[in-house]
Length: 405
Image (cartoon, rainbow, N blue to C red; front, side):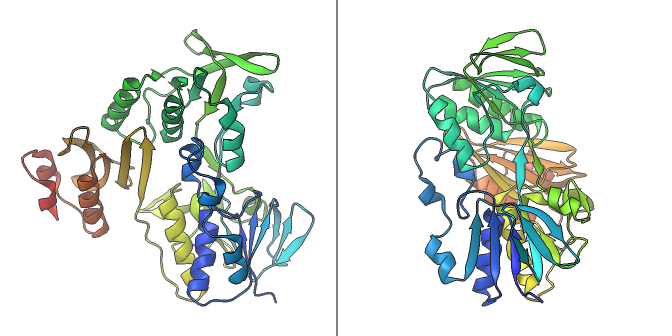
């Protein structure tokens, strides 16, 4: 029987799992299957410094190719897994080859949702951003004076808008929901970022969807909105969410929900198969969630590495996220699902603020905008593992939040 560990997917989680196994002196054969023509690299800078030309692909790499060779981690690039034979313990690849495995780990991530094909009509100038190849295709179009339409007012769309404004494009963001950040943040946080973007010259249109795109000579030139307005545009970026890459797992009969379902040890319904990162659906305080963050990808991957060596250590997510827009850094501690109250506090510096989320009086998350103190305090409170009954102190602006810890 093969002892090989096959990691399906070549991103942050894949690298973190392989690196942790080698740090634990586990020298089993490891093969990473990456559908991209690159070794594992950082994704967050793609829509920021990489798109701006401030970082090269080499600087995005977690390690050099020599590191993988020296640590006996085989990376197969430009190839994807097309099927998993659980009985025969074999992964079939898109190039026709197959890999035997002792254990397999899905680290397939997520894929951005595209605009409907009936709407795009094969037009050029319409983009999503997930890979360095996506960013490379987009970069030549990010030219000062061009008119960009961003479809979707979530963090991905707003980050793209901020980069475009930095480069001198005219930017319009449309959001079909009643407000930007409707799925991921409170109205108070949305108000902060709406004001920031409008200050930088972005037009934000809420409660309005995209009805149709029109073009000339095979390239997009206009957008028709659901309220009847028509915009003249030169390019479109879609930031309308992402779906878990779980197709191979589903086809193999592995249990899936909104992603590949895993237990607290990272195992799927097949005890020889694990899943981690953006593609994995896990339990969070009694509800299934999928955490799309670098921190979760790394922590869950390292936990699975421990369990592959026999540790049997349950994974307890400690969610935190971030978003960089203009000169604003948003740091999020906790997970705000189920909140029933928010309290906004100004920070000590100009432009700093925080929004604190509570559920039945317990602190569950904080959005800190250029407010490192609020973020650090909240993270320590949340990481303590005890219900944080700090609502009254947070609501009293005369209380120094540092005193809460």
